Image 1 (cartoon, rainbow, N blue to C red):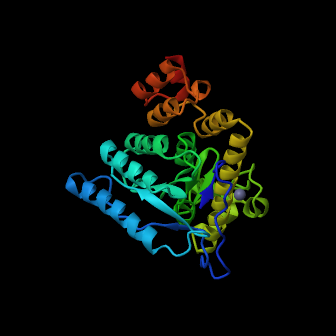
Image 2 (cartoon, rainbow, N blue to C red):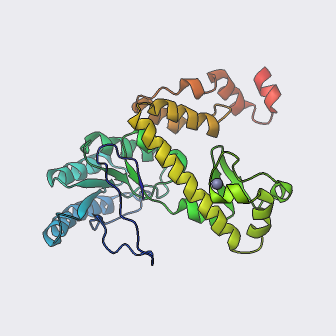
Length: 299
Ligand SMILES: [Zn+2]
């Protein structure tokens, strides 16, 4: 779990040596999760069931002094249902809140709008946790919208497919071009893997056995921890907008930032115009996508 919260100062407990969280200080309420891509009365039913279950969880909770019970906002992509759920949970005055039922195949514009709606109403002085997120870009966007915490299998799952997370996006270590590449995965990364192994060596592993994915998992988790740490300190130092621009510039050096990111940043009131390509360039890229870069710039 990644924690960016400046409001709470909490730290999630670490697992014991067997990887078991024997004494968690955050526990999640039961919720009825429905895929966001379905519509109809099932979404409403799940939302009201989730609200009924929070009362049963509160009643059954024996250690509220040292275990923080988080409620989970459901309601699919319906703003009215999300609003009922958020207000219902806030009325219960819980120590933290999660936004659930996202990252399940919905389009990105719907995704960030639900996050923005929930964080706008959930209390600012309580941790706000977006469940199942996510990609580095999603974490940066949700943090801009006011979210504090995340969890996701992505860094280790993508490692098993031979993919490394780097500031520019992703690096596919199975690709033939890696076979002769003697650079580390990410020359700017200080992790054990980047200090000791070349892309070529990891390429030779990932195309054969599991050891390569373990090294990639190590690097990817280190990348996520650094991202989270840097994001957190930029907020503390009042430099979060600069952090966002820096992050976007590296990931989208041509300035072709996805429209949903631009829309979300507008709502978050973060000016990213310095890292966006001029309008004309984006239009040219869309229309003339078969031209090479020099030709596009000349359009
Ligand atoms: Zn590394």
